[in-house]
Image (tube, rainbow, N blue to C red; front, side, top):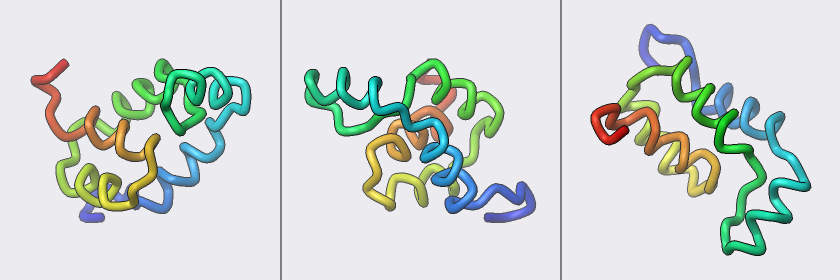
Length: 79
């Protein structure tokens, strides 16, 4: 994970901690299979800043919340 020191494992653990059953229930009604509040997800992304390598690794996990986070930290210009 380079010098930044944040590993995919760290991020996945953090996302798991942010998991909210109520959020998941609402999201699943809309076809989204994750339970992380998007405002909290953006806060994590803001702290991580742009980390292309980490983004690719997160995407590779196939985890929906991880993939959403990957999109947030790979291309800041998109926001």
